[in-house]
Image (cartoon, rainbow, N blue to C red; front, side, top):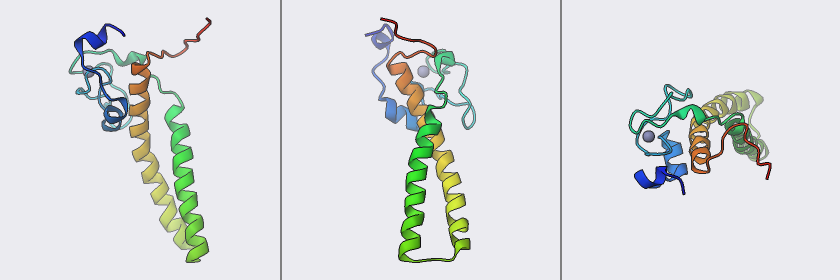
Length: 127
Ligand SMILES: [Zn+2]
């Protein structure tokens, strides 16, 4: 229990992350533009300098998009056997759009989870 929870009701990290909202108040915006994190929350003033999701979102994007798109492409190849150009036309734009949309959501979720669990970059438990 930290002092923040005395002033703010608990925020659901996944819900706030998908919407790109502040992990403390759940109302202020987390992002400035598409993927850049704001310096602080305009609603509650939380300093976002702790937020460092690093390569975390990218790993999930690669795994999820790779699984879905490669799976769908394999299924289409086996059942419909379409020409190769149709695969390129379909899967390249779909993978790009899917990746970009997921990237923002996963970055929001990971920053929300980072705040919730008070994880700080570079911190190692030496206990
Ligand atoms: Zn806030």
